[in-house]
Length: 503
Image: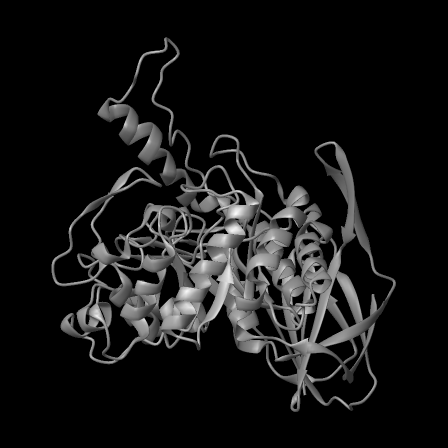
């Protein structure tokens, strides 16, 4: 494959928020994940320092919290103050201790030097409650909730700039779901009240790539929005055990990833908002979460089965299947790299993306009593966040190899080598993803406006496409090469993500 590129041919500036993450009060993400006061790794605030260090290593730029489906019945008032009252989490059917709330989340972001991004309750919540939350976080000393924050030990405002109105309120699965018309009105009125409290906010609203939904949202609330929020998962297990294989995962790159961006871009353009409203892909992952039997309380004989054994095993216990580390292979790493490449190629309008989630469940980091496991997708974030540059270049390509196969009943063809070129004044960083299960691919480079002298190749590598990491087992890792004399012909090994730095 040959690629030609020039620093003069710029798509746009890549925002660091594209390497963002997501944290929800689901299973072991918060409690027993990032927050675990009983862990030997916990700091004075109960945050696990081993997880913190792993998140710092990938320069976590932004975290979206507290949900997710959880937020659509969440009352933020219970999560602040010296006395926390446990509540019943209606989204996930567990007791929420409320130990980890707004102040703890903001403190976590300060420890990481990252941006807090709060998602509000637009399910059972009201516009007034959302604006009260903004008051608690951002108003200096006027009003009941700003004074409450001061009493709670935070005399200075948290200054949370990024807020999302709702989460997936378009879906019947969501508590307090809305139809398109009522959603537009709720977002408009919520945005008005939130901006009256703090006019400097950047607001997003739950959306999807549906024309009718977005027409109603943008017509009603477009002038108040800075972002439009979309989510995607590409592999929903039928039983928590069976997952798509490596070949199918690769077939779900390409248009499967880009189509939602293309549709939402078109909707924004139709309203003349493509220069004002940006896309936040603020929940994404190859693997959809596994949480069966949420409302299943009947047995085959039609009798209620609310016994504790069923609840613990078939409702809560099933969620442990998300944390089987062998699930997460090089397929996850390569898919994640292709997703990020697609967002970066659309960086003129896609300015934020939040991998879902950061820790446990489908996360890039897995916690256990004696430490953490870094799953394959973690190393993609390590290379991309540390090595790629801010300017994304358009490229000319020739002789692109392809992969063709069946995804269910559908035949699909995708590029076998996914290449992205970034640049700054010091040189280039090229991300190259070889999706082939076997067989190296050769990448030939042609720079139109520079004379390269040195290069370094760093990679996410594994012996097999099905390699994974687990407790006491490391099969996938990031390997940093040495600087060497530049050559314009580079071999990209099978099932590998490479970042080629050139100076």
